[in-house]
Amino acid sequence: MNEVRALLERHGHIVQEVDGSNDHGEDLHVTFVQNGERTADSIAVQVKGGVSTRTRRGHRVRVGDHGSNRRDSSLPVFCVVHDPERGGLFWANATRQIRRADAQRKTLKSVVVSREFVLDDDTIKTFVPSIRDLLVWERQGVGRWADMADVEFAPNDIVKPFENECGEPMIFWQQRGEPFAVLLHHDLDWEPVRIQERMLCFSPIPMIGDVILDSAEAYWLMGCFKSTEWWRRPIGQSAPA
Image 1 (tube, helix red, strand yellow):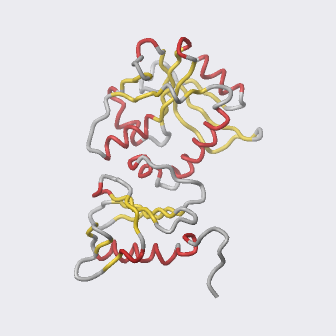
Image 2: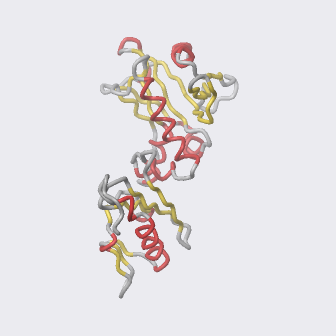
């Protein structure tokens, strides 16, 4: 924990140690700082020593009884492994991996920490902005669905959530300048599906491509397409006269 704390504090971030008597799989709470000002962005961190968690390609951190807590936590939980013999600190987004497994109807037993995800004085400069981008979507209530689909929403993407009468969530995702949108659907195990407005039909059965919809879902998608047409135009193209 001293290595993780020292790295984060060296770059101006706020680190609070969790009381060791409260064993909930979280060792540190980290609040990010920008330009000397505390931000609203915080994460929880579990820190592990490297030798006991080593695999050939990296490390694995057992989930144990913490799966549901990490999946639903208001603070996303990250695992950081300290293994100086392999180069220092390595990280993984535990909350995302647990949510993705849940979307695939699996129970995650261990969080995979890749040797490619190094955390040091160089990589922290990209690590912090990327995590803060994830936290923006988390606050907007769609971070969970990005995790379950294992996709990354960019800051300027248009992301529209919907829940049908059965309580099943779905997401309409439009990236800037792309001629298609992406549908993320509970019934499709959150696998991304490219869609276009011309693929949407209402009769005899509401569908978009091969995906069967109910009427409310179809009308919702139509509204999404109409309200985001301007974001699909090629970058630099003005609106039609």
